[in-house]
Amino acid sequence: MPSTIWSGAISFGLVTIPIKVVGATEDHSIRFRQVHLEDMGRVRTRKVCEIDDEVVQQEDIGKGYELTKDETIPITDAELDQMPLPTAKAIEIVAFVDADTIDPVRIGDSYYLAIDGQVAAKPYTLLRKALERSDKVAIAKFAWHNRERLGLLRVRDNAIVLHAMRWPDEIRDPAELAPKKTELDEDEIEQAVQLAESMTIDDISGFRDAYRDALEELIEAKSEGKEPAPSAEGEAQQPAQVVDLMAALNASVQRAKESRGETDDHATVHEMKPRKKAAAKKTAKKAPAKKAPAKKAAAKKTTAKKTSSRKPRSA
Image 1 (cartoon, rainbow, N blue to C red):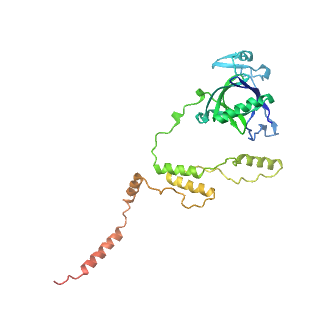
Image 2 (cartoon, one colour):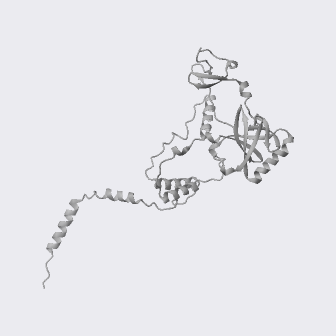
Image 3 (cartoon, rainbow, N blue to C red):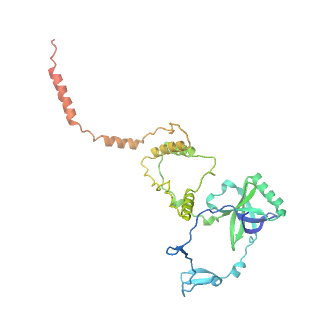
């Protein structure tokens, strides 16, 4: 069982459910220490005051809010403890909504909510059943580290999951990032849909972090005094410049089918029909390529000879 991050209760109307919060995910990233290369001694980060250039101990470090570049006001822990936080020891459900109305960009870290004592088993199961039967998710408020947060509760494999959420005003407007209006052929759109369908899978549990696997092999080899094996992947591929979008889509569909073991030669859904503008350009390019004067002149002379050698019929 993972260690408890926070303990309190779920407030569900007049129902109280004692719970413990544990991490729902694990970080398997490989981390490195900063070391002195000469003797491999550990290099640590020291907290130094910018004014007197002295190392500051943890008990002498507090919080301050920077009003301006030259003015900072102190904020004590006692003052923060006096701030009104009604959700300090409770995850208070404030509403229920349809799951598909939640923008995924607002969802942050995930946590499992486990019962804190057998007395919580019945109300916990009651909330879980209510979420399952209503096919909704719960919006809740909770407070960690002297800060009120917004959360989402849903069910996963008979356990209630808490997803931390960002407040609405914390989401940037993407309107200014959207590309300008671009014209697309219907064939291009349909081929892109075909590519998505050819790459669709039912289970993503087979994906692995290839970089971490290679890094673990490197660490194992070096710890055993062996020479690291060269990477099988080679250098990272540079994205190719897209010249013909339809051709790139057709090739992508073919590659996706081959990777799935499909040997269908007819990977394209539509024939590649050149645009009218493109056809005009091709015609314009072919027009100046009329360079065969010698052959045409010879052909004219031959025709003239044949014509002159013919005798006129007598009447």
